Each structure stands twice: as structure tokens, then as C-alpha cells.
View 1 (cartoon, rainbow, N blue to C red):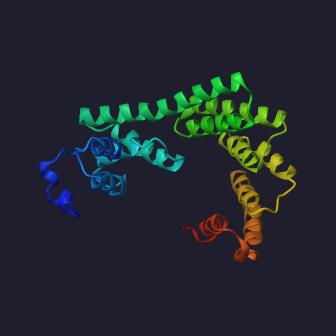
View 2 (view 1 turned 45 degrees about the vertical axis):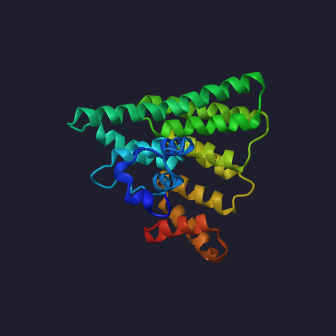
View 3 (view 1 turned 120 degrees about the vertical axis):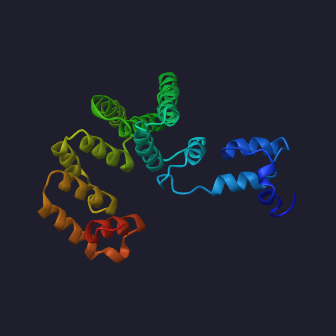
Length: 245
């Protein structure tokens, strides 16, 4: 097959449902490489109605997914659990289970690793994994995972290996637990509070504490130095001031 022949004759060929399946088929010479490219790049928005189950399955087949994608998937799948079609509801339940299993397997492997040889990077990843797992769970189990994440942060602190991202994660864990005063105390103790990433975090803490006056002051401080802000800080400021991302 050359150029667009695969797409012209696709109806007569084996039709893989995921990019991984297409890659295996290409390795066995059952399909050309165009099949992998097509399935890897041609996904419509996952939440577009009607929901494309094949697209969801394709995304779920990826070995690595960022938190934003997982949260989007969880919102869609949670809605599909109430679908009157039993097969669709079952698909949603199995997909949610597969997402949870990803985290639990990864966490168990990391815990085994850190027991053999304490490592600050493994502790850091464990804290992040528990925090992300908490984001996809409601209620008391969510708080359990957040406390587990905080436990690994405390261990990093005990080893005096806390970095900037660890501090940010600590504040986010405390905010998620509703411990806004503790989050503010951490912010107040930061040596580099003028850094844009910390100012953004301080705004979130002030907002959670319903201190709108402080939110406005922090907005003004970021706005006064807007031209020197990095792209994430500019996008953050635009969202808060103009209500757009």
C-alpha cells in the first residue's frame, strides 16, 4: 500500500480499536504503519456527544496518562455508569476499575522499592501518586489517600529533601483536606514567596480562606510584573482577572 491506499481500503482490512493494537498488527505485517499514525492522532474530544467509546478505550490503552486526562475520563465514565444500556454501564465500570488499578499497581511497586532502599525521589513519586488517586475518589477514601500522600511528604521533610514542587504539593494536599490555615502557615514560612509559582499558590490559599481582599492584592502584584511572567503564570493571571484560560 502506498500513500492513502490504507484509508481507501480500510473497510476491507483488519480494524484495530486502539493505537497499541494497530502497532502490534503493523509489527506482524497485518497493517501498514499508517494505521498506527491514524489511531494515534485522530481522536475527537472525549466528552463530545455522543460519547465515542472506542476513543475512550484508545486513550485508556496509553501506558501514560496525565492527571487532567484521567480526571476528564473519570467525569465521562461516571456519567456513563448511569447509562440505561447495560453494556455501556459495564464498560464504564470496567474502565474506572482499570484506572484505579493503574494507580494501585504503581503504588505497590513504589512502596516495595522504598522499603528495600529509601529514596527521596521514590517518596516524592509516591506522594504524587496518592494525591492523584485522591482526585478520582469522593468522600472518606479520598481523605485517606490525601493523608497517605501527606505522610510521604513528611518523610521527605524529615530527610530534609523537600523541593519547591514538594512544597506546592503539600499546600495542595492541605487545601484538599480543608486545612486552609495550615496551608497559609506554610506559605507564610516560604523564603522565596515572590516566585510566581508561590504567588499563584498563595492566591489559591487566600481564595479558599475567602480572603478576597488578599486575592486582589496578589493579583495586583502579579499584574504589575506581567511582562516578565512565564507562560503558566500569565495564563493563571488571565484566568483570575478576565475569567478565561
